[in-house]
Length: 539
Image (cartoon, rainbow, N blue to C red; front, side, top):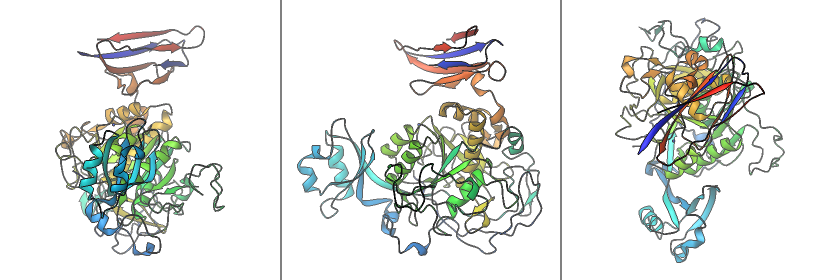
């Protein structure tokens, strides 16, 4: 027997601050993109003319041969296979470890490679491929009483495709301007200008770009790159003793070094994503959805993709720095329990591209977007007419919202700009909006942030039955909406949540929770002397 419970807190004008105590693979193809000089003068509040746009076709989203001197862990053969041939990810049961496997360690050539999450007990092991195949080793380990689960170290790739070029950043403001000879539809955008009246983001909000690298020297990005307090660049010392030497702007988990930007072609994808999120308003180039935020570059994707353990390490790095939102424009591999567990425990909102196979991922799941976790916001891509991109995955259950993802103009390395298509390009629009919402509501939990993004969308008939919200993300509504004051309320998915009310701007908070018969639900209210408040329970 389960019942739904909604709690509404009502507060009179006597209250100023009242505290309530109380989440199929898609390895995207990389094809040549089309780029075009963008010299047209645009509204300066939306986009500054691009000062340097690539004039020839180039592959924005693939690797480069320039890094041959720095060998990554993933081989071309691994990339084709979909996982690293001699590595497995294992979660041991409580009080169990590698030694608990006994003779299997020696027989299978098992040895510890690295500990990915000490608290969750997740590790990467290596094994002797001359002794066992991947299938055999997984069968043995998953049958062991010491192991909770064992799985391959899957490989992920950027969720981007390259389509025709476009002239304007229509995703921020669509006036019906012509894009590649066809008129857009006025209002099919994220309503950025309305949001910017209230906030353009905060420098105290750091967004993790978990991707390829980011050109931290790009004129539109350099002033918004996250810098780690207390870390001294180039001294060769792990100043804060976190295991990463000189991690001033983030870390490269593919090559395991501090070089978050190295190559013009290899790091184009992450740079394009970063520009859509947070390109600075500086009278040059483009502008991001949240032009005042800080970008943390966490590379885990190399020329041949990125691995599960690299993704896990990046997510945990962001968690250790208190990052509340991350952009994840990548996917591939099968269901990974380890990745699921780490995303769930990340204490952040995980923005995930749905993928570019044109599939319904309710029926053919694409991960990580299709993980059933309350802190994942997955998204589809639309064009400037409001139609779902013909490449975009969708799903009324596993895809939450839609965002501009066709012909998106953004930054690429070496002071340049280019257009790109894909759910990779849609994701940073949502991440940018999430950053604006956090700037306006810094105490928001991941549940509140997700509810806000989903309940403030612009409803489009083209998205009915395609995404759970049925709508296009709307920045203006999201930063101004009092989502947590509406019935049926913000879903409570964790063990507890706290919030602050305000007599003028936030008089009510509503939460909903499913309880099994016999479970207890506790609410504590506190305020200054003379505080007046009311607690209502429904159902």
